[in-house]
Length: 164
Image (cartoon, rainbow, N blue to C red; front, side, top):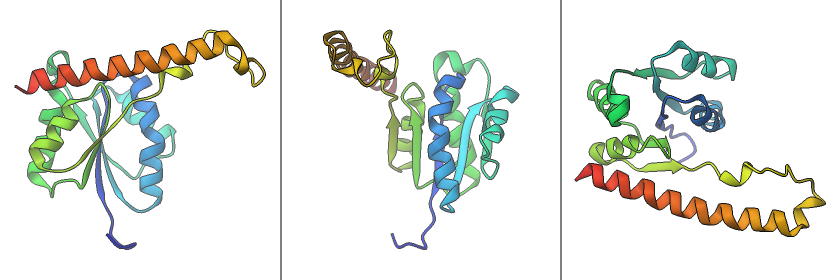
């Protein structure tokens, strides 16, 4: 790829703003660099509003709806339907709970990148720089790395099970 090649990136998220927000900086940077971004999100207006509030207005906004959210089929269905009418994306970027985005990428034959926000940012001590050298902080971080590893493997196992 040379510097003039522009990508089309599909970004997928589950219907929770806490899962959408970590993807906004990726979308903003891609748009800033001139790439095309299509954001797949739940149909409630607050999700498109989040895109606009963050200053990201130059994206396609595709809603995923219906009871399929409960069975994790809405994202897959929306991505496949959208790219049936348009050239397929170069990449699918998805929130770790939106693993149907990865399934859609597999089906389309394009790469997928899962974003797994680090649970270490959730800390009961809100450690300052000085407190970060404490034993309790070090134990918390070690525990979060283990929890993250276990959770990531469980989510991949669920994804692989559902694809069978």
